[in-house]
Length: 313
Image 1 (tube, rainbow, N blue to C red):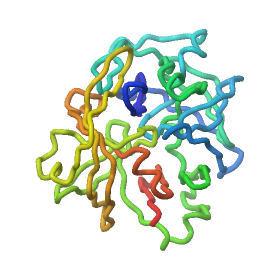
Image 2: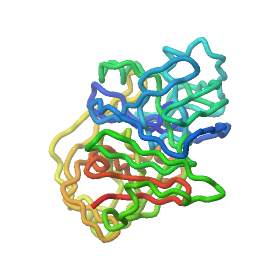
Image 3: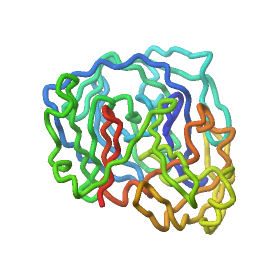
Image 4: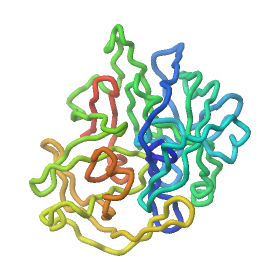
């Protein structure tokens, strides 16, 4: 989810960083592509999706973050770039408010056949993630970069299929994986406060979830009605780490059943904590997060233009 202005979320125990976030006020990047489609291989580092991308002349690892609205760069490697302090915006996380937001702009960002020019980026120290995962991380790729695309993530083959949708002919080319509509179900998504949100149901209660493939666990807001938590079995306590030394206690357990449309999803791992004073409270956009534990159960796809989510059966 978000780091320093982009909702990125990396979840875990006290070894690993947690969610950072803020409202998006960025210049829309200029996109160029010689091809309408491409296939990106990715590595799974823990529960994170890591792909290769290039910023200006620097190539390296980037985390795919569908919960983040923008590009986030690791300050360690981009400290020589011109930096603007955004005084009216600040980091926020599950552990509280952080420091003033820092932002820069890159000349070119590219991955696969996609190229972006004059792209704004938030700057963050991602050392916690690098130390926890044991890899060099240049940054995170947020949802703003994919808003003209259709994306399918195949966790079994470790491949991401991207199709850039033409404004003149929005369905001029259907991805091969989407041609047989009997293999998947379609669900509506919406953008609230620059986050991807979908609606589901728990114990007869409608619940809005933020979709975030950089969240390593699912989350439920502890303020949800008691009937929701009658379906949750708590196993242990965990400690989540935010920016710096900030930490927060939470509960870890299993949700026995989640209903999405007509589909029932059983035994879903969840973290339970109060989201009232977190980044998720902004805009009241969600009652929780669906992260890697949910998304990796099947192929999953997004059409960011028509605002649809595809879940394979």
